[in-house]
Structures are given as structure tokens and as C-alpha cells.
Length: 505
Ligand code: 6LW
Image (tube, rainbow, N blue to C red):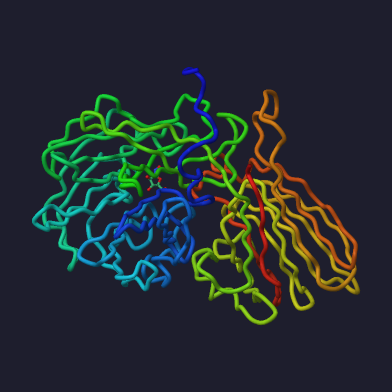
């Protein structure tokens, strides 16, 4: 009946659409092919590019920022760095515009092939804001529309509403004083603007309410890209606020024409598993929903969960999906016949630049493992939200045995569990296990459990079962998501590769 929450199944597209740490999606359709980019904060390479022809199956074909100079995130504080890109296409050229707070600022990067290489980028000097959009009017004027935000100085953190400026893309010069366009419909943080020309109107889509439970998508329309804009009376026209929907925080959208000619809205969202007060281990992911137009205003379907096939991620070669913190994977790891070797450089997982390469955790329930050769070093398998939030299983050679330690680190707390295994290659396991059921009681406040264990020479040590809540969007709150990967803290450790398999069905 109509007062039931939306069904969990039956969406026309999988949801999450792009699982794992993939917030702030922006998408463009070019000759029937879709390209979608997401935010990466302090990670390198930055800005993954996902491609699809049917909007169902997505493949990562590359990254926009493969060279550190393109974004300059080497020293950015955690949670700053690459925020909220927009991808657009004009005259045979793909454009990604993005702000890198505390890094390179507002940058426009271009490519003829979205798989790369992308240009060195042009900085738009003097643009005070985040979440830039790029569009062109009929005569070719380039407009950057963004969320005005002071990122330094005495008024740091002050929001200025949605602003716009005409720019010269070749030189990076602003061509006028930025103008205010709209301050939204009254919720906090009007941001994530995108402009579209559809029929007789220019539409200004924004997010408001903040990127947590209050998040939503609102819209206004006007006669020109400069407005004036009239707000929709159904704003926010998409939100999960005050609902028990399984996908929460939906907002930060981008509209695109779907494969059947209808309109789709990609958004970020989280999956807090056990209810509205629960915890979302993977962070902000990319979701999609459909939009109908009524009286030239959009009406969006709620975002419904539709997890499909199990996902397996196996890696022993240097593909696009390895990421590393504030430096490139190639500066930390070498790939060869025997697998992945990491040479320690004195850093640990507590440091802003650990000797760690990882991959996005793609399913809430996951079994991940690697076989480590620790004859010449100390290292292991870790799940990381940031340098203050990580769990790991680590091995070292100790006399004629292998000493293993499981470790859980959250701000101000550190716990270790130790065990011993026979000498030789050691298989390290890090599994995330979902709670059974989603009932009331303590379970409702629960996330997953992370199990840390190891085996060698036919023996097993099960060391720890740690509450996953501390490594979730709600607790770590540093904008990133879970990344699982390999690290070394002493000497050289060689891993046979990385395997992860899981299913959220
Ligand atoms: C993004 C902005 C936001 O740029 O978070 O809270 C930023 N709002 O829209 C990083 O994802």
C-alpha cells in the first residue's frame, strides 16, 4: 500500500551504481557513452573515470589526476584535497573542473580521451569556493557556477551561497566580479551547483542541508544561465531526511539523459545498514534514480537499494584501481613476477603518508586476503579510513616463527592482539561481517565487525573481531571511505597480490 516505504528491489539500475568510496558523482553522456567521475580527497591517483554504455555496467577506464602536480594533494590535511568534480564535454574535449582545497585550488583539466592522459590543468585564480560547475551559453561564453566558501582568512568556513563568474578557460582568468545566483531554499550549505539548458529554461540544480542525514537536492529555473532563478516549490525534490530508507544522505546530484531518453539523477548516498542511527562503513557511494518532468519541473523517484551480483576484486598488476595516500602507488610499490613489493620508509599507518597501497572496499560484507613474505620486512593488510582510523593484521619474522599482530587504532585508543605461526609465507585475512538482521535493540546501533586473522603452515590464529562503527562515514567523518590494502613498516615485504570478494545481497 502507498504508505509503505519504497521496496528494496526493482530499481531499473543497480544501487549503489558505483559502490565504495565514490562521493560527489558527476556524469556526462557523449555519443551514447557515459563517463562519471567522483571525489578522491588526499588519495592519488585522483578522480577515477568510470565508463558505461547502458548505465548498468561500469568500468573504471582511468583517472584524471595521474601526475601529482595536476592536483597537488601531497600535503593536504585529511578530508581536504580533491572535492566534487564536474565532467562536461565540448568541441571534442572532455573537461573536468574541480576544487582542491589546501591543494591546487580550482583547476580545469581536459582530455580528448577520457581514459587519459589529461592535461596539466589551468588554475582559475581568485575563485573562492567549492563544487565548481562548467557550462557554456549559446554563444560560447564559459560560466563557472560554484558554492561560495571562504577557505582561508578570518572568515574561513563562511558560506556565500551559489555564485557564478564568466571565465576565460585558456588563461584561467575570471572575466567579471563573481555574482550571487541563489542561496537555496533555506537549508544549510547550498552547494554542488550544476546548470542545464532544457527546453525554454536554464535549470540550476544544487544540494542543500549538508552532506549528512539532512542532505537533499533542490532546483530553480530561469531564462538564462545568469538567471534570475525562480525556486521550485517542491524543494528539496529529492531527500531521504526523516525517512527510514536504506539509503540515506542522498544529495549532491547531477542530471543526465538516460539510455531510453528519460532523465536520470546520480547522487551520493550512504548505506547505514541497521537503521537511521546506524553506521555506513563504505562512506559515501554513488547512486542513481529516475526523474520525470511535470510542468517543466523534475519529479524524482526515491533512491532504492538494488544490490546485484557478488563482487570480486583480485589484483597483482598495476591497474587503475590502486590508490595511495598523498603520493602515487608507483612511489610506494613495485609490481613484478612474485607480486607486489613495498619498501618501508619509516612511516606507519598512523602517518599522513604511509607505505600503503589499497583499493576501495566495494561490498559491506567482504573477505579480503593476501599472502605475505615477511622474511625481509614487517607489513600487513589494513583497512583504512584515514591515518587516525585503521585496523590491520601484520606479520614479522621472529626467530624460527612468524609473529602476527592484529591492531585497531581510533583517535586516542589503540589495541593489539598477538599470536604466533610457523615460519614461511603467511596468509593475512581481513573480513568485514555484517550483523544478522536489522531489528531493534543494540543491533540497530551496529555496523559490521572486522575480523583479523592469519594462517601459515596449516595453522590458524583468529586474533580480533573489532566493531566496524569506528571506521564509518558517521564516526570517522573525514569525507573518505574504506580502503583496504597492503603496507610495510620495516624492510621489504612482498605480497602475492590482493583478493577481496563479497556480496551485500
Ligand atoms: C563537497 C561538498 C560537501 O565538495 O562535501 O558537505 C564536499 N559538502 O559538496 C566533499 O565531498
